[in-house]
Length: 357
Ligand SMILES: [Zn+2]
Image (tube, rainbow, N blue to C red; front, side, top):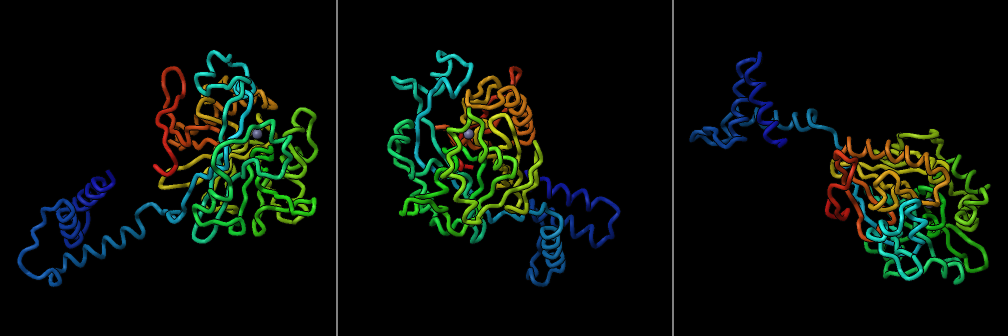
């Protein structure tokens, strides 16, 4: 498509008020690209039009094509293992007769959910978004969550030759235990230390205060041992976020934007990264799975469900308009999806793995 546009551009430029030399060179270039140029029998090196055309192409590519400074960045899905949560809690007011088709429950009404993270590598810098549940809590604690699956944070990072000490940024969408648990480990002496010794941990000031002074309903999700050791190690960078909406976070990571929402918890951050000419939004607990696209499908865990409803409508509208790729943190099957507007609302268009983008 771009090729045809480019040839068309050259043709139209050659037909406008340019000098004779430029006109013929552009027309000549268009003919080359279409494969019908008459190159004659003289050596190519003796044909000035060829050299003019080469110079034109070079200048065009350098100054006239869209700048893509992030072409070196790579994104990878990082599986850290699955856990189980009550299906009713995950789908809120939606009855089980409907949601069990989306994620079948076991005999205790528990469904399997992924704890998927996103790894961005740009040159020799690595940013990990969220970190899963970790491994430092007691057997009793983990007994509530039925950890299963073959994946671990360490092994999944190693697949991409990233060790814990290589992580430069650990961006935390929010501080619930299933998103930040892997960010802090036991130090072997009864205390805790950051998992990523060389990383800056990114949260935001409003959410940090909310998590460290938790309300009684949300308190069980904010575990002090997941949070305080980051600050004690002086590895914390608290962003000054707007109360809601889109923030340019280019200073954190090249090209990154952050979409701030408040329905699930105070100032949860949805990172949006440029990738292969698209934008990938890591949607955290705004849309925990592909089954949560319909507006009323809201987790009972959310602090402000009616606000989530509005935030979902706003975010999905932006996502469909801009053709964003959504990446789901908790969907046990679907990693990524695109959306489509239909007469009955926004729906999933295509699903795929991030590696297939
Ligand atoms: Zn959460």
